[in-house]
Image 1: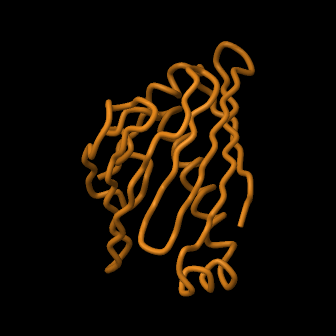
Image 2: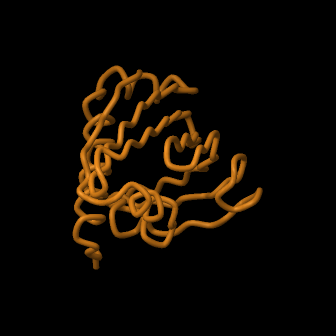
Image 3: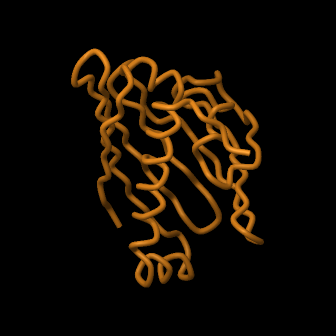
Length: 149
């Protein structure tokens, strides 16, 4: 399944990118994120890996984030791998003016198991909704620099 989400953020491009790359700030806009740890590679560089651990109600999810491509101020592509699913996320950034950033996120979900293939077929809107939620939550965080408790 492939889809695109986008959002306009009232914050300068480089401030947005700094916040996106700061793993410590992710807990403020990625609902459910409990912890993260560096796994391998040079932190923040292409090829580096992080393990991200989420809790959604009683469900715990652990995934590995791998930086696939990074062009300062333009692109930040990552792959997420978890049990049964591979997600390719290509993020493009554009400064619309000195205080406005456009973020376009192309997502592709590739199930690796029958169960996750069925989830994609039965609940495609849930994946799209979650992706959009993270963009909206990031926008609110970046524009207001608020923290979640």
